[in-house]
Amino acid sequence: MKYIELNSDDIFLNLATEEYVFHHFTDDSYLLLYKNDNAIVLGKYQNIYQEINVPAAEISGIKVARRITGGGTVFHDSGNLNYSFIAENEKARPLCYDDFLFPVIDALRAMGIDAQKRNACDIAIGDLKISGNAQSVRGNRVLHHGTLLFDADMEKLHRLLKVTDAVIESKAVASVPSPVTNIRKHLKDTSMTMTDFQSALLSHIFPSGISYRKLTEEDMQQIRHLRDEKYHTWEWNWGKSPRFTIHRDNMELSIEHGIITHCHVPAISSEATDALLGQRYGYQNLLRILSPIYGKDTETIVNQLF
Image (cartoon, rainbow, N blue to C red; front, side, top):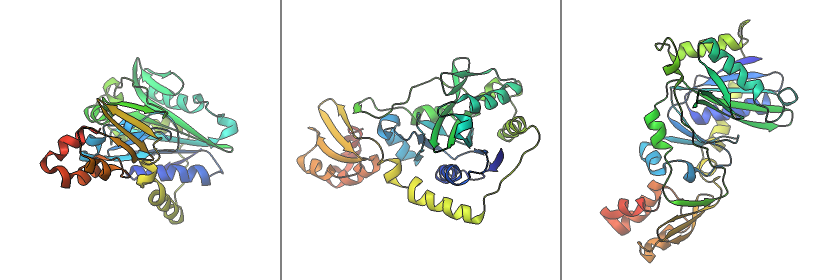
């Protein structure tokens, strides 16, 4: 197995790098480690509007990204370490997580952490989750990636992943809420830095020394193209959400591919209803559309639509 070091904190570039390596580097198994700037990352089959606090995410300017694997929604920041294993499928077996979970669990245990596999794809300390994992299989290759909550901002995590209190009818795969904790709290030496933690993880996975593979400029050109054409687009991150209907009191909105297709909101005028149809269902976008109609009351009106 070879190690590819990623120095970017751009979630869109890092997800593009994962997919590129998954599809093009078929000569060996690979491990990638990376950290992202503040971002929310959804599973491929999830409804973004069902998973996150849309107004809070848009107001804070948080990046929202969709990955090519299933699973639930997670929050990334500089206190979260992400790992990706890319390997032969016949060795890994589809949807068999143990080949990838246990090297990480063993490394955590070597640091004095009582880490355990929980369910099919989580790592936990007791009842508290520290890692969620997901996979994608293509031909004879498997991409397995996961998170490690080392010292994440828990207040921000809970605030941004707080879902609406409206009723959403959707066939999307919903996240399963789990109580979480940071690994750092459970270390004997709580002064350990993220750099120290990453080094300890690598030392355990590569006991005989790390074999590196560097990305060439040609690789990076293709990765940046994939980022720009896919991962950094509204169509992929928001528009891929399965169709759904949202209800609150007498309000009903139907959304398909992120676009409002039906609008029944007694609290707003017919002019506002007509203005909303065919528009992207986003907090800032609805503020922009309804502002000429409602002026200073626009925010109050739009808050009722989420």
